[in-house]
Image 1 (tube, helix red, strand yellow):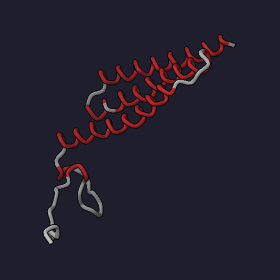
Image 2: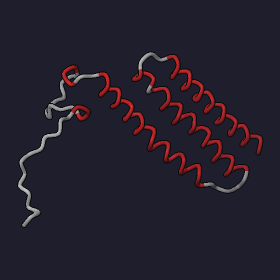
Image 3: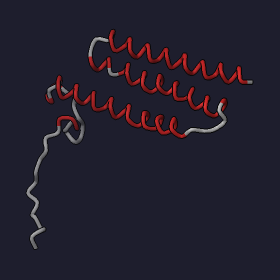
Image 4: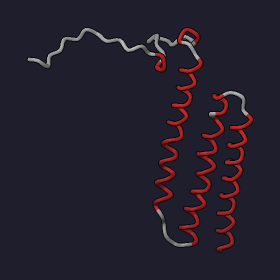
Length: 128
C-alpha cells in the first residue's frame, strides 16, 4: 500500500515540477508584461500547490499525522497570487496607457486605475 502512496506523491511532485518549468519558460519567452503575467501565476498556484499537496499526502499517508503548516501556506498562496497579479496589471496600465486611450468605462465614466480624486465641499461638523 505504501508503494501506491509513494506513486501518488511522486505524481504530485512531477506535475508541480512541470508547471514550475512551464511558468519559468513563459517568463522568458512571452513578449510583453501583460502576457508574462499569466506564466508566474500559474507556476505559483499549480506548481507550488502540487508540492504542497505532495507534502500533505506524505504527512497524512506515510507519517500518519496532519500538519496544518501546508494548509496555511496553501491558503496564503491562493489569497496572495491573484492580488499580486492585480497589482502588476494595474502598474502596467498606469505606466503604458493614457486615460483617453482606454475603452469607455460605462456609467461611472471613470476607470478605477485612472480615477481623479474629487474633493467635495462638505461642511466640517467636528468643531461643534
